[in-house]
Image 1 (cartoon, rainbow, N blue to C red):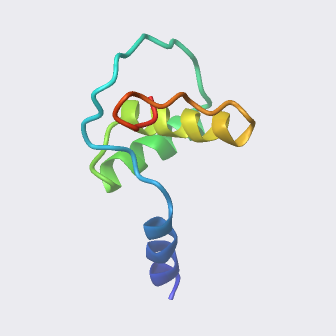
Image 2 (image 1 turned 90 degrees about the vertical axis):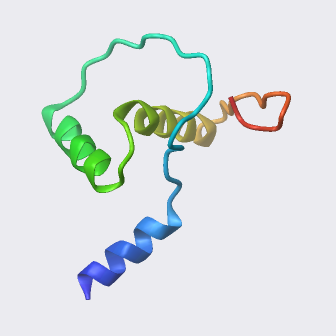
Length: 78
C-alpha cells in the first residue's frame, strides 16, 4: 500500500528535465550529508542528474517565495 502511495506522489511532482539547454554557472555550496545522500538516491531512482535536480529545486524554491525566473523567447522558463 505504501509503495502505491509513493508512486502516486512521485507522479504528481515536477521532474527535472533530461537535457536542459540553458547557460550554466558554477554554484559552490555545501549541504548536509543527509541531503546529499537523499539526492543521490533520487538521481539513481529517477535517471536524472544532480545538476538538473538542484536547478529545478532552486527554481521552485525561489518561485514559491516571489522570485520567479524570467521566461525565454520560446516561452520556457530560464
